[in-house]
Structures are given as C-alpha cells and as structure tokens.
Length: 277
Picture 1: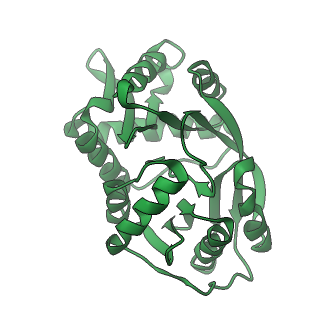
Picture 2: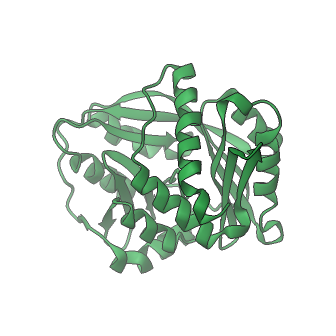
Picture 3: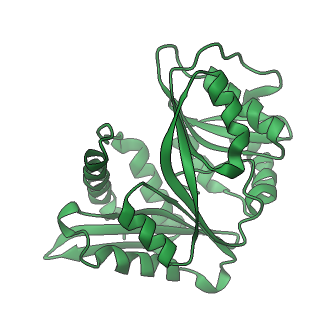
C-alpha cells in the first residue's frame, strides 16, 4: 500500500463493512473520510512493511494494515470487496500481515467483527478468542468524576507508562494521530487515560479498575446531550466496565471478539482501539 491508495482503501472499507452491516442487520456504515484517511496515511508511514493491497484487473479489491509497537503486533484493518470475498484474497492478505516483523513479535491482537469468516480465520491463525459485549444508548444521570481532566499531547509520557503496564507496549505517535483525527483525551492523573471518538469510547487504559471506571464515567458524562454513546470490546476481563455502563442506562448486546496470541500483558483494565489496538 502507498499513500496514493488511501482514498481507494477507505472507499473499499466503507463498501465491505457496509455490506457486513446489512447482512447482520446493523445500521449503515458511513464514517467520515477525514479521520479514516489520517489513520491510513499514518500507518502507511509508520509501518510500510505491514501495509498491503490486493488488485485484480487494475481494481483494488482488498487491503490489510498491520502494525508493530515494541514487539506487540496488531491487525488494524483487513477488508475485501464484497464481490471478491471467500475467494482467497482475505487469506493471502492476512498471511502477509501476520508475517510482518514476525521475528520481533512477542504477542498479537486482532479486534474481530461478528463476521463468521473472520472469526474462523483468526482462530485458525492461532489466536484465542475473547467474545465481547457492546454497550450503547443515551447516557443519563452521569456526573463527571473528581480527578479526571482533559488531556493532550503533553500527556504522552503518562500514556506510555500506562500502556506498557497494561499491554506491554506504548502506542506512541498513534495517539497523536488519533488526536489529529479529532479524538478527545481524558486523563486520570497518574493512573490512566481514555480517548473519546465523538460519542464512542475509542480507547481506555488504566493501572487499576477504580481509575478505569472513573475514566469511563467521565467519557459517558462528556457525551453531548441527545447523543447515543457506544462502548465496545467489553470482554470478561473488562467486567469492571459493566457497572458504569449499566448505571448510565446503556443497553448491552453481543459484539465481536478480541483475539490475542502470545504475550499481550495483563490486557486489563483495557478497552482497545479499533485502529491502533
């Protein structure tokens, strides 16, 4: 993949995930292109050896993005055009992504949708599945907890220490890309941080469950009146998240799965980023 492919990859992702949402009976998939292009161009720059596209007859029909951070591998994106699925393209892209920086990898993470084919592929690759719940709805009765403040680039040192404790690897410049794409950072001084992507919790990492709950309550309190919040990737290891989302009146429903392999640290309290794992 090159920077020139970014717009076509975004269009392909919209088509592929839109098709999946229709098949699953979920709402249409229509993310704004601006933040998506920042993510794609950032990863092509930081991990050019993990960025791949597949073409047929001059048409772009698939893409994969893998990243490695301090020995932790992650699959940021894997999409295949609906008309070309189940024909081996996704399998080839996944194999290329898995091979990226293989000698340096100590562990790996994949966030999977509910697509049965994706779940099967990641299980076959030796990743252990952790089924998820999603929480969604209009928060009510949530107040901003004491000790949580707005954060930003000046807090990168804190995020790196928390990330290394929770997942064994810092996100580093990935968080700067997320902030450049319009995400909002919340900080629990010395204990953890969260990213808020509109009304969706985009990432949350903390040194203890009490801090994680404060950050989640702050994220829900920050949602604009009349907007529906979303909290994703709640596995059994993240049971601490259930109390805050239930208090806020959000509804729980089955989600996808977090797949892990090798050493990923305690991975809790942690709600991963769909883009940066």
